[in-house]
Image (tube, rainbow over all chains, first blue to last red; front, side, top):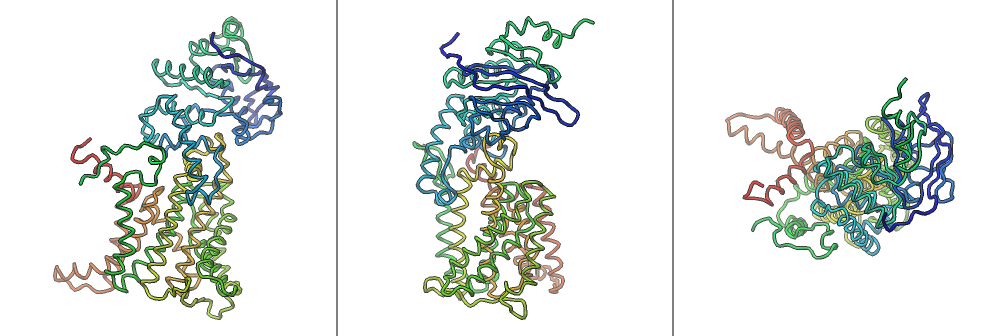
Length: 261
Length: 358
């Protein structure tokens, strides 16, 4: 289709089980993600999709199972570890820093790469100032990429929903992630905004070679942009494969359309 | 001259990232600071220095410390007075127990001790938040009140429980007149404000604000809540500790633990709420409001009374003062919950566009 080359397994999830008290959110789920691919997770509401993302980037710890990232076991990883390992994510309900400007929000995404200590920052000399300028330049590249130059100084609270989603993506991209987790990036958008977002996701994947794992409800979008799809229902995996395979899978059809009894 | 940015084009990120990116702001700040250093000492009498300006400067510094923690990092504290007390007593002990200790070093070391204590008593913030954290920090307040009252070592076994220091000396400059005290405190306040501005516009400040605004998202992009919260407690307590040391050694000269009681903690919190949380200027506005307004009312009410032919007694003045002060606080919080700093910012925004409405 395009120039990128899908590579080896970069993220391997094995037999993940997660429960909250008696509620089994995920049961024995295994799937993998290949380098440079766009991998979608779909399923009806309450299927455990967001829980799955939360497990991948260390917000939740699964009771069972193994997370292998580039051949290394990351089962007891917390969010900080996940961020260090090159995982970034966006949120279903936008989780931007409301009191800060767009620029500051995106700059915050660079925090792991900033090394100046507190004293240097307090006096704003040497490394602190240099670093701030270098990262500003990087952030401006992302701002250009996502076409949000006109709002860089605006407080994010004042932005319309579609732009907030874009800033959320920008903040994640500022981390220069190897794997980007997107939780419903197109929820609540109109057709044009969805098209823009699709274009950005594909561009990120294409230009930076970032592996994308996304949750989405809009089947048209999912089937169009993803390379492989995994389908969850009630915490179980019911389908896995290319969009065409998944579309033909009888379990998936019954989960979405209801089976005849 | 209009307050306007037309025609000011920035050609580098450096120019865009200055502390005050608009030249008018920069000049205004320079003018204010220069006036405070040169103009004020020529114009003002001793009473003004002693009763108003020195307390205002020191409490501004303390309010700045509270603002870093409450306004920027979103962690509430009722132990601000305790941090000031730790700073005051620690620097007192450094000064009397270590031979040849320079006063400025003692003050900064006092601040560092307060920072250490702040980290210990800020640790509950890792588990609890909001009102529960407020109660946890209250523990710090009562603990240190108790410690400085009962543990005689801290007060150098003074029989009355109060401690006093001689006039402090800075590289041969003996700080004893009110003007000296004013200039010394002003110098420290300016230096600390610049540092606060730098921290808050840099990576550290962004981490604090990220934790304040959305802590889950902050952890996901690699901010460690423990590090961010405890550094906020440490920096805030450092500022409070230095302010406490100045309050004791420069403003009061001799003091007892009551100088840093829970009243002080609440007063500082009010300053930040009225002045504006999450704005450095809010600390100054709040301190000015709380320090100057009561004195102003106290002076003005009898005058207003005589205008209407009324004889106003001192008792009445102090009662009315409380009533007006209280209602002004309520008024401000209703009209602008984000504090005076926000009113100021809105005014500036309007001024940029004036005379056009949009």
